[in-house]
Length: 179
Image 1 (spheres, helix red, strand yellow):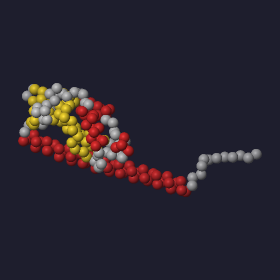
Image 2 (cartoon, rainbow, N blue to C red; image 1 turned 90 degrees about the horizontal axis):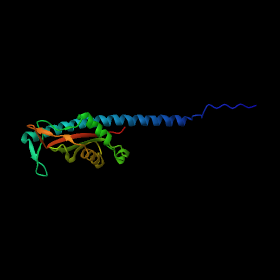
Image 3 (cartoon, one colour; image 1 turned 90 degrees about the vertical axis):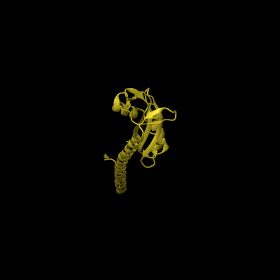
Image 4 (tube, rainbow, N blue to C red; image 1 turned 60 degrees about the vertical axis):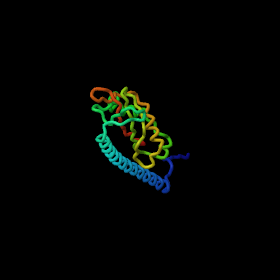
């Protein structure tokens, strides 16, 4: 009578080396992602500050400008426009409606797109433009998606000047990060 016992496959030294190489590559990739995100966060903060200072300078020179339609638009109203439900609701809206472009995912493109727009006196989002982008190889796909989702936002609460609803310029940074 013969008895056979098996404990699984026998690992060869090459299999162990391949496993170690794969683990090292994954660790290196994770470290690169952390470094890239750290760089992007720093660059986003610097760009946001640069934009804020430029915005203040525009506002100091004139509190308003004429839009493409000839309407008066405020750089900053006494009471800024706000998303219905507040900033947390806006973040939920963006999270639920942004679709990371597949081509950008495949290329592992990450970054931040600054979207400028006007909230008109009725609370409608108009004149949406992807103005600045932070990150290597941030392509048109991310800008298009950021503009698409902002342009499709529901009504906001309009900004006011001396108690009257006015058209007001606004900006939102939208960050695209892979899981």
